[in-house]
Length: 168
Image (cartoon, rainbow, N blue to C red; front, side, top):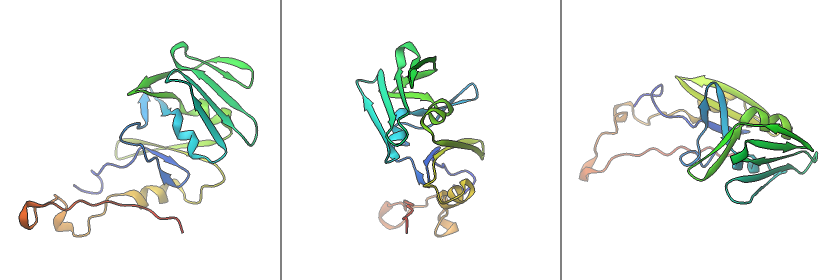
């Protein structure tokens, strides 16, 4: 497995990987990015209330903005106005259009195509790293290039690499 072929997380919040990537990854449909609504709760000041998987309330507790989204009706109330919004439930997780949600909650998005894979970052003033720095910090880097294929060790065990990033 080379660095260019290794999987990289598709979603980041500020400088961190979205920890539920395996269960609720970024979904791209017809050029639009969809994110699990829950990802917004990774910002300390955003509160998520999910009354079942179909009705989600996401509130910015600092500026008072909110998005109340009814997935099955594809409607969202945003600060008193009602909008048509694409969304869906996948594996029990409600998804909404990333740009719509970010714009209405006062957070930002940036996206990047890395080796054919779409990467999306939600961020605010708490972000310290550039998207390039985040990608480099999370790329697969084998300890020993000879072990790139995950060769067997004594006793039939294989090396597994787990990479984490610690904030200093």
